Amino acid sequence: MTLDYYRIFYYVAKYKSFSKAAQILHNNQPNISRTMNNIESEFGCKLLVRSHSGITLTPEGEQLYEHVAIAIEQLYQGESEILSNKTLEHGHISIGVSETALNIFLLSKLEQFHKAYPQVKIKLSNHSSIQAVDALEKGIVDIAIVTSPINIKKPLRATSLYSFEEILIGGKEYESLSNQILDIQQISYYPFITLGKNTSTYTYYSNFFLNQKIPFHTDLEVATADQILPLVKHNLGIGFYPKNSDIFEIHINIKNPERDILLVQDASRAANIDMLSLSFKVYQICITCCITKLTIVIPHQHVAPTAIGFPPVLIN
Picture 1 (cartoon, rainbow, N blue to C red):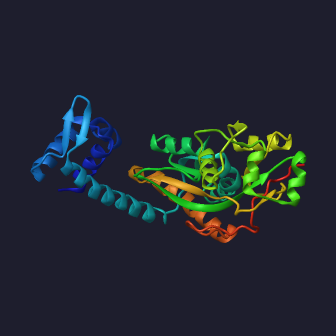
Picture 2: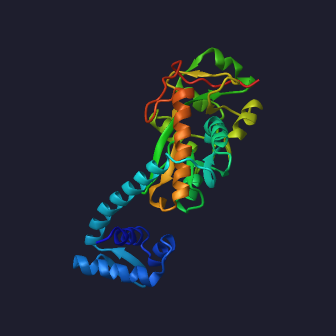
């Protein structure tokens, strides 16, 4: 059986739809249906159950799909690695990015990418991490660069690009806290500011407090990370924020939270050769910059914090 047959089976099985597979493969539905009949005939068994409500895989279809999916995704990965060696003179790429990932990581990398490939057009979509991954799943963006933690399912895959530390910050009214190390339990005594529900940040700190056996109560929930600083500055509460040189830290008695910037890609969309090549070039520049400029360990190793404890940061 030819590779084209397996590709057709892969997309039909993945999307449970002849029309979706035809759209992705730039084919027509009768051809897709006819090919699936031929595949089932060659195997001598039913791989799909067709009904008015849609398509489901038989046990034999599930078994075949597990193997075919691995093979197809490996082929696409090989294509992307070979194409990454070619010079890109034009093209376009759409990137879904969370605000934190954009500000502390991606902007400087895009500057270098633009210098290397000035003819490549870049479209940025600012999302929460969850929204960016959703946009990738729907084909709205080519890649997503987000903050951990994030739940993804195959064929999506995530690669850690950069690890960063978040510290506890506070305004003038909390200045006295900067000269002491807070017990983690004491955080619950103060108004707490964080991103809203349905964000990876909310999920992260909900689990973080749960692991410390502390109730997670939020007093102010904001839509974007850049709203945390002005609220803290006006003494509306304390909150965690990526560490930088412009804020003061309130120390606590446990290790500061560490998170990752993640590159999320959809391996099943490798049919678009130009997009694959561009995505891989972005990936290469991100990785290169991390190694040469940021001394980032990739993946899954974190830079040790400089001090034990959580500091609330004081904003003047």
